Length: 132
Image (cartoon, rainbow, N blue to C red; front, side, top):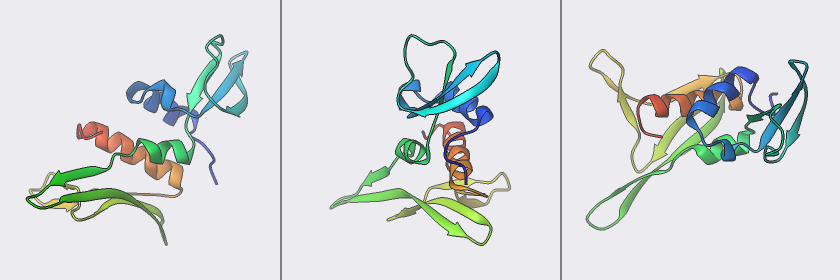
């Protein structure tokens, strides 16, 4: 089971998320990864690259709210283990919907083999939809 984002995922996330949101970092020497540490990136080291744990990724997933006349509707990320791996959707008082290109509106759902991959893909999807 993956404990943190891989190098490719980390590069993509570093382009759209604040580096301060990373709770881990990789240290590189001679162009090779030597170790991954938990904590914020030390400011004095340029050989460090950010990476995110599952907890940090879940923390970046937005909770959506819509005010109504008498209350507030809430839509939260829902991570589930399935037969196909892991599924991440938004559920609650309403679901986040997206047009799939065929004039059919469907809930946003990401399925991947592990929870790190599913969270990364959801963050990238929400960024693409300008909902992050």
